[in-house]
Amino acid sequence: MRRRGVTIFELTIAVLLVAVVLSGVAQLLALVSAQHRERERRIAAMHEAANHMERLAALPWSALTEATAAQAALSTEAAAMLPEGELTVQVEAVEPDESGATAPPARRLVVAVAWKNASGAAVNPVRLVSWRFSPEATP
Image 1: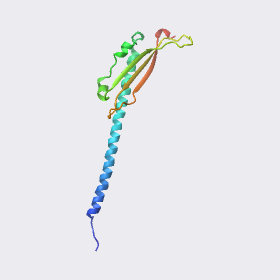
Image 2 (image 1 turned 135 degrees about the vertical axis):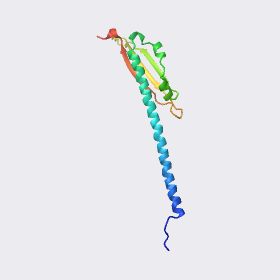
Image 3 (image 1 turned 180 degrees about the horizontal axis):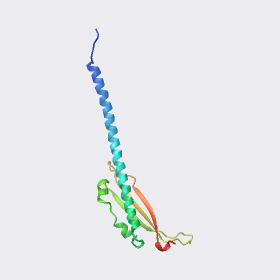
Image 4 (image 1 turned 180 degrees about the vertical axis):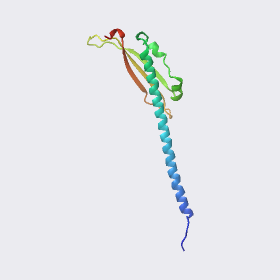
């Protein structure tokens, strides 16, 4: 006798296969979503660091001090996007080297933005470094 249709056993196997595939797709989507959020955070941190570096570059030479750097803070948008975000700005006067050569007065500017990921671990910070030379030293 020939049977037509689907048995309960075949139907159960098909449902299990579909459930396994859907579970894998859901995990993949969750992973892609987490990576997308981390990429968006890194981009926000890069924009924040670039904005602060531009602000420092626009300041007059006499205003480039550690006191000015201490006043820097994350914008409200960046603080909302970066969990436990922290902005550090350093203004370092560059000393002449030991060779005795006369070097123009310069300051090294370092802007770094650090934050933590979803699991609370520190992420590699975004760091920008620039140099400013005294206007009297330029030809």
